[in-house]
Image 1 (cartoon, helix red, strand yellow):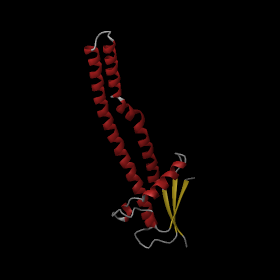
Image 2: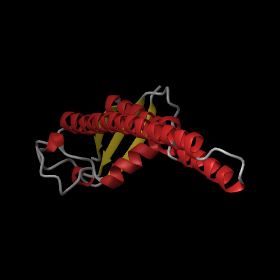
Image 3: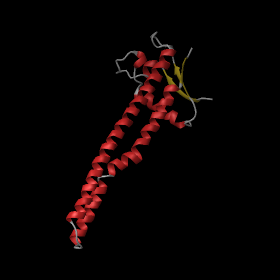
Image 4: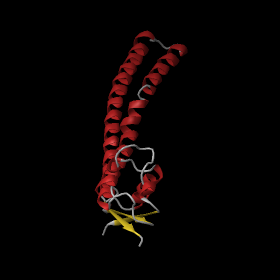
Length: 175
């Protein structure tokens, strides 16, 4: 049994972004409609298939807005969003690698400076040495943040959009 998401609108134009000049089957979803569908999809267990039912108050006036084209448009949009998140993930990993290299080089430089330049037991030398060590580790915060925390929400949202791209879409018109 598929998890049901229902949207009630008076006409199909409410589902799509009115500012998007693309042909109907390539249009972006309206921000509010996307947010509504995504939030309901998140309510259902990850393993459930999704089924979107669009209830229309009246049949579409435009022949280009057939139920099959609406289904294709919705699925195309979520597939596109999943692709965008995949590219964003790859960009984040590139950023993480750059930050890691820079952070490691800076940390090594700080540690070498602390060991070579600030030898001795004077309190000022000890504080400076410790300060450089801390500064080196602070420079590692960005790559640590990326590799521990920032990547997995992107992949989770991408998986959700992939589920939404595969969902069954049904258009029901009131008679």
